[in-house]
Length: 169
Image (cartoon, rainbow, N blue to C red; front, side, top):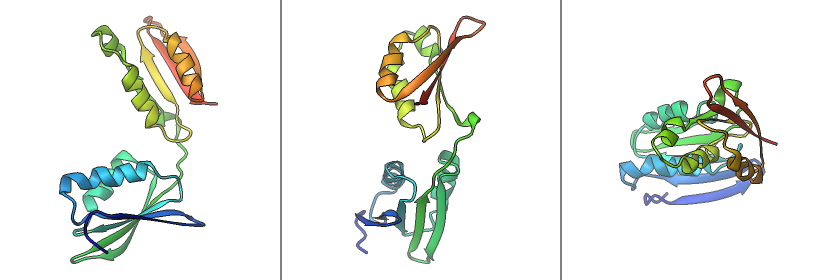
């Protein structure tokens, strides 16, 4: 396998396997490349990671940032080459796994929160909901989210702020 950060996709009946050889990449480029690839995958797809050291820090990062969504299977374990099969698995998010976006401080400081809300929406897993807390009822956002396949439930909180749940229809 060449060590130039190359990627190769192979599709079979089980999903897509992407080989990522990071040995020639600058260390600061490795994790972002791996996570960008992982985030573009669907359940059943795999990354075959080729590295020049034990990628244990990457394993811990996956555990912290993508809990329950990875099967990590070592294929080769050094001393000069490590190969790890990283499979994306379907997770069923629990109620507490809602993506929470509290934009009250942004609104009070005069900052536009729309980009932050859209970024959070883009990071949602299947089955997750987005919970928005705002200083006002975000009526214009309802149509934007509906165009993206989301329904909503709104409630005014006792202190006057609003909480809105967005969930896939």
